[in-house]
Structures are given as C-alpha cells and as structure tokens.
Length: 439
Image: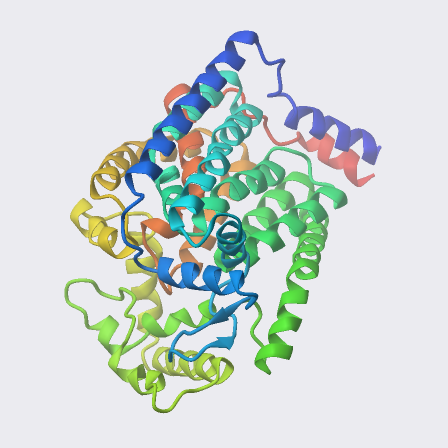
C-alpha cells in the first residue's frame, strides 16, 4: 500500500511532463542561441575592464595555482601563505584556465559563457516539469535576455558557475518525488556548491519544507538528514585540509567571518546605507595591522567574537540588519539608485545593470503572483518561501544584487507562471493517498 501511494504521488509530480514537440525544440534552440550571442557580446565588451571587488583575489589565487601554490593567498597582510580566504572551487576554476591559456581574465570570462548558457535549458526544464511547455518556453526566452541572470558570467565571480548549479538543485528538490538516492544526490551536489559558494546552505531549508510536505514530516526529515550527510561527505576533506594547513577549525573559508563588517557601530550608524557591509570598520582596524599579523584562524575567531559581542550589546541590530540586508538589499526593495551604488564596486556594466533592474522590477511582482496562484500546492509554494526566507537570513550579514544572482532563474519561472497561469503544477496528494502511504 505504501508503494502504491508513493507511485500515485509520483504520477502527479510527473504530470507536467509531455513529449517535446519539434516546435518547442526549435524555440528552445532559438533561446539558447540568443542567450549565447548576448552573453558572448557582453563578455567581449567587458574584456578590458579592470578587476574590481573580489575579482583581484580570485585572479591572484588563480595565478598562484599556475605556479603550483594551490590555495595560497596574500590576504590580508600581504604575506604569502596557504589559507582558505575564499571557498576553493572558483579559485581552482580560474587557476585551471590560467594554466591552459595564461593568466588572462578575459579567457576565463569567455570560457564561462558556454557554462552560463546551460542555465537556459535548465530553466526551461525546471519550468516545464512544474508548469508545462507554455510557461517553460516563456521562461527560456526571458532568462536568455535577463541580464541579472547572466551578467556575472562576464566577470570573475563564482556566481558564473553557481547559477546553473542552483537550477539543477531546484530541479532535484522541487520536481521529483524525493527518495534516498535523490536526497543523497542532492546532498552531494549541494556539497560541491558549498565549496563554490558557502552561503548556499540555505537551500537545505527549502528541501526540508518541500520534502516534508511531499512525503510526510518524518520521511522528509530523514531525507534531509541524508542530504546533509551527502554534503558533509563532500565538504569534510576540505575541512580536514584546513585543520592540517591552518591549524584550526575553518569549515570552508574565512567568508563566514563576514558578519564583522555588518555588526559594528560604524555600519549601524551609517546614515546613507544602514548596516551595509564595511570592509574596514574602525572597531576592527587593529586586527588588520600589517605590523602585527595574525594567523587566519586567530583573525577569524576575533572577528566573529567582535561581531557576536556587538550583537549581545545591541540585540536590535539583528532585526535591523535583517530588514536592510536580508530584505531591502537582497531583494532590491529599494530605489534603483541605491542598488546601482554597488555596480562600480562589483565591476559591472552600469547600462546592463540598469536594464536588468528594470526587468527585475517587472518580474518580481509577477513572481509573487505566480507564487500566490500556486498556494494550494503547499509543497511547492512553502518550499519556495522557505528558500527565500533562508536566503534572507543567511544574507543578513551581507547582501546585494550579486548574492541573489543564482536565484534569478527561479524568479523568472515564477514570473512566467504568474503571467501565464499555474495550471500545469501538480497538486499535493489527496488525504486518502497520504493514508495509504502510512499503511
């Protein structure tokens, strides 16, 4: 009886799959070609732009890799040492292409274009399994021309690889009945994503909520635990490496100490940009004195301690930072001029960013409409809300348009569903089916 119930639910979750017509294939191919042309032109136009933001560090680590110094850095004191200032996969990616083509960022940017184009068919697949061919075709076209979904591919940022990976994770999480093997596969892929972008941990909250509503809370918790185990298996060797090389516990990278830049008096009292991340707050300046260098482990520990101490003395800062970073900055619920302030720091094109934000201000309300229309399918609607909440919590320490980038394809899918309808989305199993699973 349990297998029968699971099959019925699986059939409903597969109900959106239909044979792909020749016309649909042609439309998808046209969207891919269009997206490839736009992204190639963008990467070419940005070829002489100087590195900005985190790009110099990624490039520097890539150059050191070409000399056999894997995961070495000079940050923050200018002293060359083995560390984990950044998560390892993207520096390794840059180092690979630097080794093949020489230390030229332009080569990496051009190589990233074909990887980025994979986001288009993946977004199509996500939308098709959830909402059917009409919404899928619209989503493929929109994501192909939507700059916020691909502008990072023309830059040296891990979002270039994280965006298609996120779509694959969403496909596994939301479009198929979870099993132990799928949960394990999800966890292994999430582990790789964490080594690329440690903040991706918030996806686990979406998986937990969606799977509990699909197959019951006990089974959902069990499958989430399997996914966590898979992620730990992937991340653990790197954590052990950090313990050996750095002589301390650093799970993935020094990036988890970023909360020091948000939770300090200077950031809290910034009248123009409250709780915006500060690179060198006065309260922590002594820790970065090159005359008195600290080990990475000691520096991380003291930065986290200072931030936690500030929160203990100012508990209201958590809610304030959640509003300004987790809501306003992450989801761009602010004036466009405020969002554009980040553009020079990230090294983006001002024009492309303006076009992307203009499109986003149309897509976001449509996405909310799509989510509202899907409210009766709780496993999907609440799963997506859990992902959004998890992202808002994680990015309370530091947020901006860049950090939302891997979720842009999901926003596009929801927006197209909001504009065209959600009739193809399968409903959750009926009460009788749920009972049969328990027998």
